[in-house]
Length: 124
Image 1 (cartoon, one colour):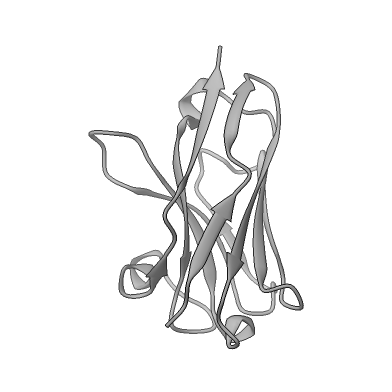
Image 2: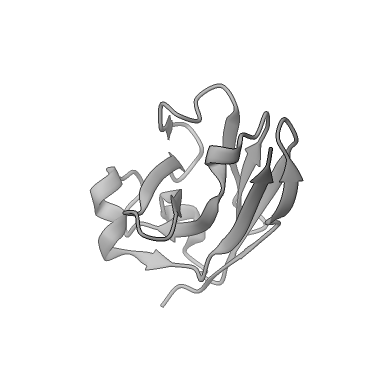
């Protein structure tokens, strides 16, 4: 069982930055692909970014490319999402997810582990 706890959400003005963190309980953290997703009430959850087990491969949604950066520290069992140049449309609950493999497609996170989410609100 893997427990994920997100932190770092909050309220920020448009153009500002936030860094989300996701701490994992798993001793096998370094063998898991990790991802960030977000959801707005009434809409489907959408993929934001993910990173392979060793950080060698990353993927981003087109809407965040060039503004967000995903990274991980396997020694700390933590994955990060640095969010810069935030826009009001980035407002959502952000979820951390772990896939049951070292590199994953977006769909493969559905069968993995999920955190409780952290709210990010960007004011205009």
